[in-house]
Length: 366
Image (cartoon, rainbow, N blue to C red):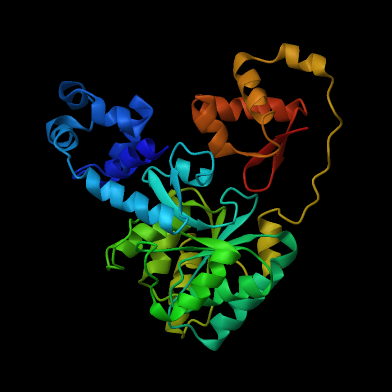
């Protein structure tokens, strides 16, 4: 395990190798250690890698940095989540630029059934605060996991209200887990660790530099089922997160505000340009997500039906037999089938009442 982690961390430190290229290499070689042991000519032949990146991999010698990070991980009981780890947030897998390695400290299930990301301005109004608090309170009965970025303003309100209502909440950070930004949220971060978690793809000793926040936002947008924007100007991190959510095919919602209020300018813009659906209350949101409907259990099918399944359907059924609930991204990842083939197999299985579709693109056997 130590050796695997050493190479996993090292892969994220290789110059010229970003997450997209790292994913390509893992898809081909299966694990990080095999990437470093591959021959240079073999690496050069891979589309998108070429001479420069192959040279960067073969010339990499900074394994001491990986060793130091492992010491930090062990000291502070941090959970590293490589892209092949079963506990890696499966919803991120469909994002082309998802991190190959995450660092996590907490107890929340990052693959739970219902996950909502809440974002907004740092300089919120009383209106934004009240609406955000009422939204989170309205989600209490549905046991929703609340994700945000631990920033001032709406992020802080979302996290605090989640804790107050006994909902788990995850803060995604734009720096390493050896520090908290903003400093004033240290106590809040400690509380979140006990009732959710802190998540980042940055190693320790990484400062909260400006360029890190858009990278942070892609995780906020990618690990959820839906994104809600409460208050935002026409520019800023919340709009970036909403745009990322649309590119990742997430459900994006925005709370409208007065046309004269610059703090609602971003939300009104998203709604006006069909980049977000308008919602006023948590009940609106739950209805639109179909999270309040009681799923009727179809009658059990006789086992003889499985004999008639296609090879692709059999693969899907076998995967669903391994655990009670499975996210569609995990099915794609583990089945080895293309997304279209897996989706077609799921549709046929649903039509035969062998598989049940749950909110949040979760599937289970009937």
